Amino acid sequence: MDWEGKIVATHLTCSVSGRTLQPGEMFFSALVVKDALFQRLDFAADVWSAQDQAGFLSWWRQKVPQPGNERKPFKLNAATLAQIFLNLKDARTRSQQCLAYVVALALVRARKLQFLEVRSEGDHQVLLVQDRSASVVHRIRDPKLAQDEEAHVLHQLLELTSGGEDAG
Image (cartoon, rainbow, N blue to C red):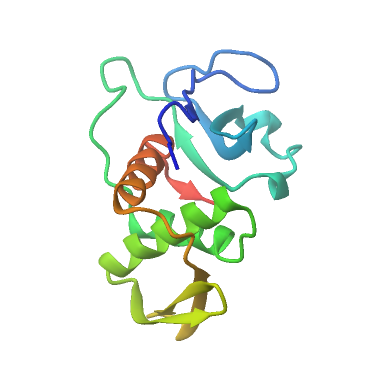
């Protein structure tokens, strides 16, 4: 899958009101797939509660950076990854399965999920991982991404969630 150009950049503008979000302002961001593109939508805090969160692949709360602090390197924390994974683990669409699979691999690497095995089920494979804190086994369908696609999806996930705090 060619991911190049399939992520729409954000502009820190409320998707509902069109208002530019101000430095220091708390707001919410949501990840959606629209017209075969991953898109991050930003919402001012005062309009967030009216949004249908079921339509989002994931969402998170963050703060508009102060001038001069716009794009510092950011490490996605395990709690954010875990919440994104929980939102996507039962995904049925290709884009959601790809993201869920890569997030699961990142959580295995972060030692938040334990790799158990890969099982063949018919014409596809399923990754079995165990949540170390809850002792729950999750089954994630392998979307059969090439290695370079996995790296690209993870890179795009980091770009989309840059500066995120509380994922949902």
